[in-house]
Length: 469
Ligand SMILES: [Zn+2]
Image (tube, rainbow, N blue to C red):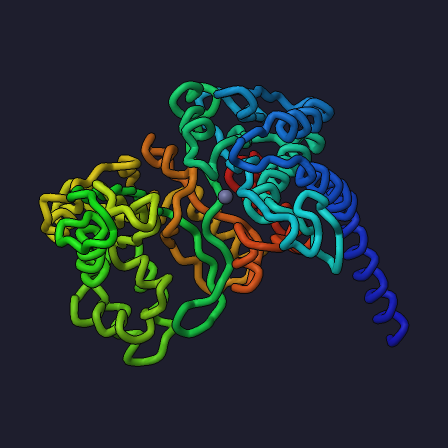
């Protein structure tokens, strides 16, 4: 009796082992994939793609050589000398629009002297790869590349094509990158939906519970230049029509009176999803945040942080100031730059009118340095949204997937303007200290995060494109 039971136990174990082996035979060899990806990632990071001057040609040529090696169809597009964009694809059935994975190859400048590892060395130290672009945004490119490579090598059947686009010029506004591609080579992309940078694993700003934020919207950039005109003269004689004084007074009025709180549908939905996880009375206030007294209570209390405030208002940030070029000369003009960011739904002309009124001085003129974009948010529902939710549940931490908004701009806006749902989804896990490194000193990404991101990107691609479902 005893031995018979044992025998049955062995059989069960043997069958399980067989089943696992059979499954392993059809699954990618992840340790080999991870090692290969790490090599590609570090090599890609060693190309100095600092923008300006936005030269991505060598980095893109490198990615192209990897795609060519695996026989993956690809094209490059040069918008201005040196600014090269790349599109690669594994086609699906005709008539079905593909799934697009976007990233950018350019990076912001790094001052090497401040770094503990040279910013283009891609040193591997302490389980991290150290380099400018490690997070923003070259890891994302490698996750997309490896996903294409695995699908191609495994000859996985697709019900929808899959493509990657790697752009130049994102850090300088995208005019020679994603925007140029959308304008001039839409036929080469034309996706059903897309994932891009923006959004991440993080913590609920109130309860601290793990959440995963997926960007469905971003604030619209509206850069204004103020020019104050007055009477020039000698600095030894103070005058009332000194343009520097006129400008300072106006700026004081503007910053003292920031725009009112406004709850967008995106944040209203995020708050409604957060509400059940919070304590009373915050849970009640979040669930009813569309009532102004509730929103004000939240804004004074649990949502008082600068980053939350920026998601609940149009914002005006004075960043550039210019008066006289000489200390003893009163100039005839003084100028200021205002970095304004508008919530989705804010009418730019009504906003301009309110700023003009706040300034209330005809000696000051206002010009647009960049015309506000007007991309509408992507829906937090639908095929790709649902797939992202499944992948977060399977691969990533976060009790809740929150539709979120980024305060900064990304290339997603060019797709959203074409009506293509575009989601900020970077499947990695960073704490706040690590997050601060991007665009900062000692940017780095753990190898563990790179591996996690590749797996999650692959799972997402199979979910929305695989025919085996
Ligand atoms: Zn970026």
